[in-house]
Amino acid sequence: MVPRAAGSNEYDEKISSSLNPFKTTMMHSCSESAAKCLLVFFNLIFMVSGAAVLGIGIWVRVDPDVVHMQNLIELDTDDKYLTLGSWVLIGFGAMVLLVGVFGCVGGLTRNRCFLGLYIFFLLLIFGGEIAGGSLAAVFNSKIDGKLKETLGNTFKDYEPFKPNSLVVQGWDWVQEWLTCCASNDFRDYKNITFTTTMFVPNSCCKSVGQNLTECQEEAKAGMATNQTTGFKFLNNQGCADDLEKELKDHIVLLIGVGIGIAFVQLMGIVLACCICRVDPDD
Image (cartoon, rainbow, N blue to C red):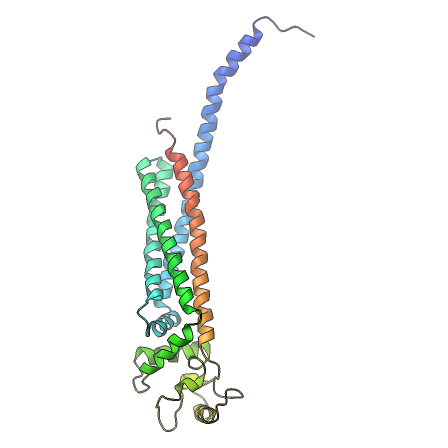
């Protein structure tokens, strides 16, 4: 075995110590680059999710099924949860798109001002999501066990000879959409005066525009005998249960989107904080 020359250990230590700063700088640079790339990547996802939220908000405002469902449910209450929720979605969707731009610019340029605004707006949106989740929970609790009562109260404003009224249009649309009749069943129309040959709206018939005479005869006989099954032309099932399911499905969709965006937000906050800690002069 060849003995090591004197002073070789000291020389190795000097070489190692001179390389350590270089290694540290390289690792630091790689970590910073990875954080920047991840921040830009997550913000692209964030912007796509913002566009999705904006699209859902607009859809809730313009989709005829949802609009008539909102009108019908909100007729007998001052709580405009669905309408308010749609505007919140539109506002936050647009805000998410703007915040995503701040995140991308801040990540690429390491501009602390942009990153600071980005973190601030993310926390603001996060607070809004918590408020939105609370609103959804309140609305969900109001649906359980109270929807039939709310729908039943709309019949006091039901005037069949005013076809353009919100309550008549709302019920006609929902009954055609869900192929149902009234809140509990067709007997909810028993105390409403139509004509001598009409006992329920034509939208309660299984084939709207067809077999209307037979449908009305079944409704007349059913009201006289309290029969609720065995109809060939009349929808005997009430709308409340199906409408409740539709509402809850919409709430689950909104909550799922919110949870997904919240995860991306948390990642964005962590990455932005990591980049902010880096000295821009390094």
